[in-house]
Structure formats: C-alpha cells, structure tokens
Image (cartoon, rainbow, N blue to C red):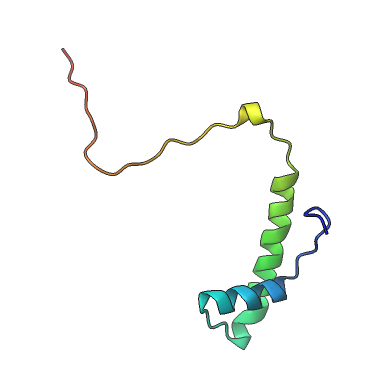
Length: 74
C-alpha cells in the first residue's frame, strides 16, 4: 500500500508507541490521546499536500550555545 492511500489508525498507533516508549496511558486518558493523534494526522495531511518547490526550501540557522561574537566598532 502506498503512503498516499495508507489509513492511519490512531488507536493502533497509540498502543504501539506507548509500548515502545514505556508510557502508561490510563483508560481516562486513552480517548483524549486517540482524538489528539487523529487531529495531528489530519493536520499532517494538510501540510504534506501543500506544494513546495525544492528551490524554495532554506535551511534554518543552527543555534550553537556559547559566547556570541561581537564586532567592535572602529
């Protein structure tokens, strides 16, 4: 099945990821987490559908902590 036609099952995803990450999801939390995962999947589909040309992509600058270089004025 291709990426475009694969259906997301938030409950199955929750079960797999909770087990993989060692998360304890209570019965009270479960439905809220499933709703969130379904919403996140719907948002991801919208973003993935947006046309973006390769020539429009720019890498973000990399943050490196430490002392900033300050140029002295002459």
